[in-house]
Image (cartoon, rainbow, N blue to C red):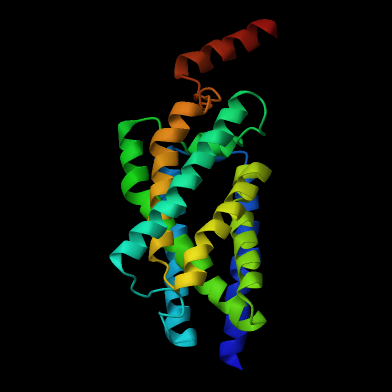
Amino acid sequence: MIPDMVRVIFVLALVAGVPALSYSTARDPDLRRVPRRALYLSAVLSQWLLAVMGLAFVAFVLRSFGAAGFRGLGLESFTGWTLALTLPACAALVGMIALERRGLWPPESELVHLLLPETSGERVWCLLVVAPTAAFCEEFLYRGVLLYQVAEWTRWSGWAVIVASAAFGLAHAYQGLNGMVRAALLGALLAAPVVLTGSLYPSMAAHFLIDAVALVWLGPRMLAPLGPRPAEPAEPSEVDRVDQAEGGDSQA
C-alpha cells in the first residue's frame, strides 16, 4: 500500500508539481535582477535534489535501476543512437531560430534570453555544470522513472511516451508556449532509444550535446539580445539627502 502511494505522489510531483513551480518562477518579476550564475546554481541544485529523491524512489520502491534505464549498451549502438538524436534536434533548433529571426516563428521568452551566457565564465558553467546536470537529472526523471512507471500502469509504452513528453514540456513552462512545445517534442525523440533498447545512456549523451550546443554556441550567436538587465535602484548618498532636505525646507 505505502509503495503504491509513493509511486502516485512521485509521479504527481513530476507531472504537476514541477510544472507549477516552473510557471510560478516565470511570473516572478524580480527574476531578471538575479545574477545569471545564481540562476544557474539554483536550477542545478533543484534538479539534483529531485534526482536524489528519484534515486531513493528507484532504490526503495522500484528496486531496480535497470528498470529506470541504467542498462549497458554496446558502443556502436550507443554512438549511433546518440548521433541519430543529436543531429536532427540541433538542425531543428537552427531552423526554428532562423524562422524566428525572420518573424516566421514565435519569439523565445524573456527568460530564455536571460539564461543565455554572455561571458566566458558563464559559458564554462553551462558546459561543465548546467548541461551535464540537465542531461542526467531530466533524462533519469522523465525518460527513466516516469516513463517506466506510466508504462507499468498502462501496459503500453505509447501512453508512457505521451505522458512523459507532455510532463517534460510542461516542466519548461518558464520558456513560454514555444519552449514547452519544443521540449515536449524533444522529449518524445529522446524517449525512442529508451523504449527500443531499455537504456538511458544515448538519451543522456544526446541531451548533453543538444544543451551544450544551444546554450554555449547556438543561442548566444543567433538569438537577438533583449537589452541590458535592469539595475537595482541606487541608494541616495548623504549629499543627496541633504540637498533634498534643503529643497523641501526652501519650498516650505
